[in-house]
Image 1 (cartoon, rainbow, N blue to C red):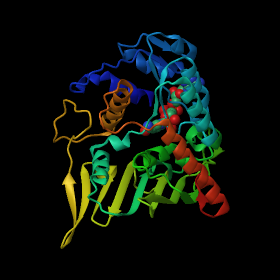
Image 2: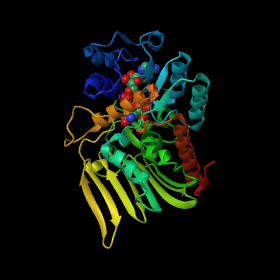
Image 3: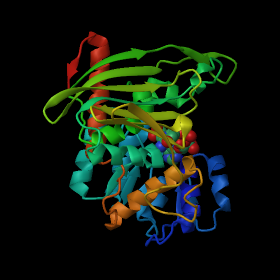
Image 4: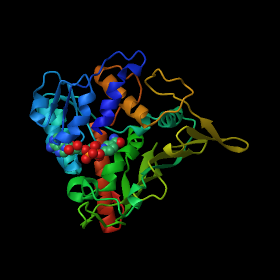
Length: 361
Ligand SMILES: NC(=O)c1ccc[n+]([C@@H]2O[C@H](COP(=O)([O-])OP(=O)(O)OC[C@H]3O[C@@H](n4cnc5c(N)ncnc54)[C@H](O)[C@@H]3O)[C@@H](O)[C@H]2O)c1
């Protein structure tokens, strides 16, 4: 993901009237080969395999850390101890305990920290938030949100760290996709009170890339049936995180249904927002969205947005919030929200094991 950040910062000039210039100055990777790609970026002064050199650099104010999940706690803490601000990756520690340790360190250090989750920065995600906040939905009946991948449908896809619990975490697919799913619900104040989870290990062996086979011990798919509280009423919220979802390349979706209206968006049909109105006849209407992003760019309003665009919008939100000009726009996932998401995933593990609903404190 380091390359995605480099790509967004490399075309920062497309942001119209954005009052801050953000420049990539240093990159660290223990793999020398991985560093080679960054040699083409003229703003970089330091390419290193030694994280201490990066953290010692007085040119660096903010560090983005994209490492396998078992390394999050160690390196997030090092960044904070070096007095730098942090843009963290999900799932923000390998488990709930790690997330709490990171959160405590942030509170102690006073550094500005947010966590990555770019999908809500698609125009469709932004419009879903607007619809929810508009009050047009009436009394909320139910919420569904999810993130579905299909590349693991290929049983011959070689194993990597994301398919092994010791690197990815016991929460498996929830750690990989869950933060994206929970960002909008948590920001709307919809933290589940309890959860009933069904977790699946479907493909349990994968080629090891050396002619043999390795155990793939992570949860592939997670169905979470949770209960949220809205204006004192219990409302069901279904959350799906799947690595084996036939035909779904990278489908992030959210649907909120109410007594007066509804809203539905999926990146599968990137431009399309569906809104529901309860009138004399009940109408679902399809709206073709253009490039309506929170931080306007040179791209015209009729054009289609893509993954690099929402990734850039997320970074623009990070720096805007850090500098105090977010002005009511959606901010990135906060450390509190990251810990909450871990509480949900931890409860889901317990729920699956006990085959019962678990109350989330
Ligand atoms: N926001 C998103 O959409 C998104 C997408 C994919 C991954 N991620 C997250 O990004 C993080 C990294 O995932 P990835 O797909 O980029 O992984 P990756 O395996 O592609 O990249 C990790 C890099 O870290 C390097 N590395 C390993 N140990 C290191 C160390 N001690 N010091 C310095 N460099 C080291 C590796 O050489 C590798 O180049 C994870 O937290 C993952 O969940 C986020």
